[in-house]
Image (tube, rainbow, N blue to C red; front, side, top):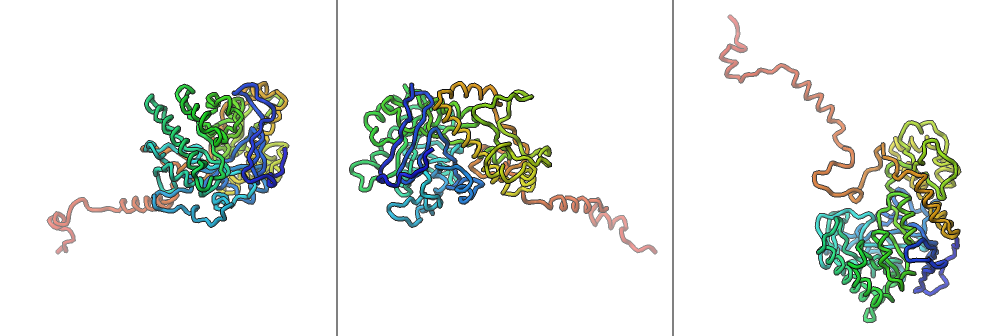
Length: 469
């Protein structure tokens, strides 16, 4: 893997080159994404998902020293405020014309590729629908409408390396009329965005690369949008953002060599293999962070080991909460080269989990991303050898189809980590009221004292407290 930077190239230099030619539009392929001043990325590869611009559980120093991370994805709704007239703090970051406010605000290193999208991955379903000129987002202080002009302004001010275009995505299965609106709005938003960002009448053209969104619909339902992308917008589109991997089939042949970013919700390694088989180049992988939060250490390799297991299917990971790990001094995975496995044992990590120490999730996050990085490295090697399809079938036959179930209480959940549902039960345990049992005991003791069942007048009639003669 080449690690040199492209600092010697002009600032506007960008290239995504396919290594060899894919036989069809829907086929695994190797590529190389290069951008001036950024570390080249070999594809297929993954894009870690951030929370407010930071990788969850891991500090910047730890990420730069211990994790093989070359890119990050950030959702603009993480930085937006609820009020329309409130200036987000990220806009107040002092920058030079050539600097990225997003990079400076999040304190990320210069050679890291930053991708900005309108929403997090996975997005929280919103109670109000999108409108003709805005989408509904969940900010840190509640739901609000993000207008198209506001998002384009964010791209120009924050200057990410790659920007994902706005799309009208429904959180529920859309009806016939809803699908038509989805296509019409996305078509109009993409056309206006490219004109605003790269038009000849624009005073300062943005340096950010633009990924045109492809809706999770059949090609016939968005054929006009696809044709317009190919005929009118092709020169300004750097690639495509997919919300499900099968959307690769709607890409025009003349634009098949452009980069493809999947914003789908891959829940297992098998889903990753499916995305790669359909020609996806970059993928956001939510299940890595979810496994870390659940206290699960990932344990899968590609290609599949030839040694058989007694229980049949191999688990994709193992839960670190059970007492079986209490005295286990072995690493999470034998032979793993990650910082966690080289320095710490299963028993220590289980102790940290039960003690609610933040270090537990930090060590698990380092290990899990190391497993994912090795997984993608092996995928690229199998594609170059021409054995990917065969190895993918072996993997699906050898491993379980789902991750292990969570048995312990993970870190405190945030609002964007679960769906907003009516009458939903609290996701976090109650942290206040720890002395309620004392109050309950006091109430019971007071009730045990004998008390009269009549009022004072009736007691006086019966001679209560009357002096005997």
